[in-house]
Image (cartoon, rainbow, N blue to C red; front, side, top):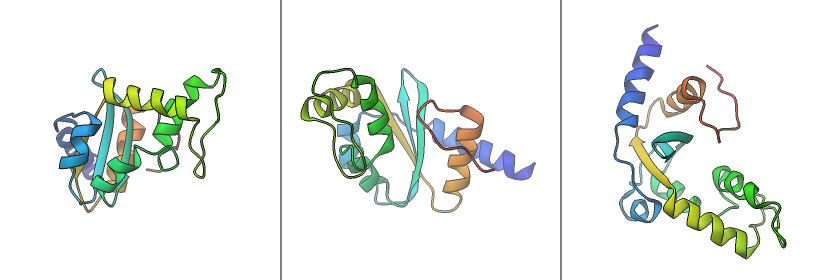
Length: 140
């Protein structure tokens, strides 16, 4: 019970952090561990944890390095010339541009620096908020 209350408090702090567009975050994201949230119209779409928030924000720019970005790209699978991305290959150039546009116009990102307990917080958020793009199941 105490653990759940502590995680809930951390979630409230993380949720209240400023939400910014990706280009802005590339310059202000710290080189610290933490949890980051991706929002669309103030709805939580994805949560992740990382050892380095700044580096992870750069990863969002490359489909080979982020599952959220690959998930976004799947909506364009019916396009002529579509090439699926993986951890080894990017989407085709046109799809990459479409994803970039979505990330810059429709999504905002917040982060909460946290070195201890970040995995537990990520799992708590996935379990309780069920972000649509989190594919893994929480192990609380």
